[in-house]
Length: 200
Image 1 (cartoon, helix red, strand yellow):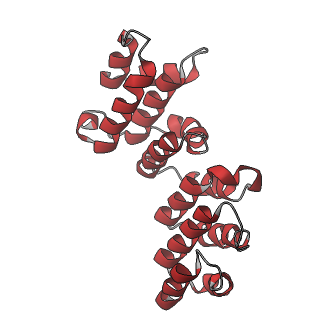
Image 2 (image 1 turned 90 degrees about the horizontal axis):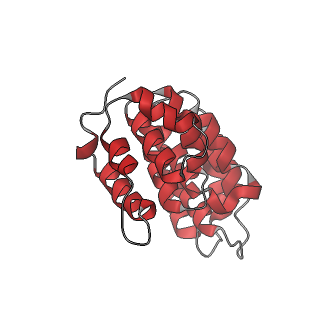
């Protein structure tokens, strides 16, 4: 495990702490002592206890999972995957960041499952972007599948489709040619699809 000594220097960690400090505070602006303890502890067992103990607030679980993820502790994996599919996009951003640094071999499979779950497509943006960053064997097939479902001109989740096009452009894999060509007529995706095809 890498350790925790540089967490305070990580911009994403600082951003998360600023966001959660407001969430953790009460109506009088008082912050629980546990908040500072979780943000500063160097004990991975204490962080893991927060992940497994009942009745812990979501902000506490997020801090614990994020810090364990940055430290390379695989016990953070399941909590981070749940946060990656949260309705709050800022939580998804933090989870994707920590998962990238965790380096768990299960991450791409989990991200692909989240991205391709049509019942949760409203929350698929960060899993899609994570797949592109991971460049895993699961990345191209999952992005092709998701993009293929977003090709209707009136699809309300076109931003997810655009993230797929951008991810496929970065991956520059010939397997994406057919779906990128199918995206050319789309009013919101066509320009990005043309650029992506130019990279193949």
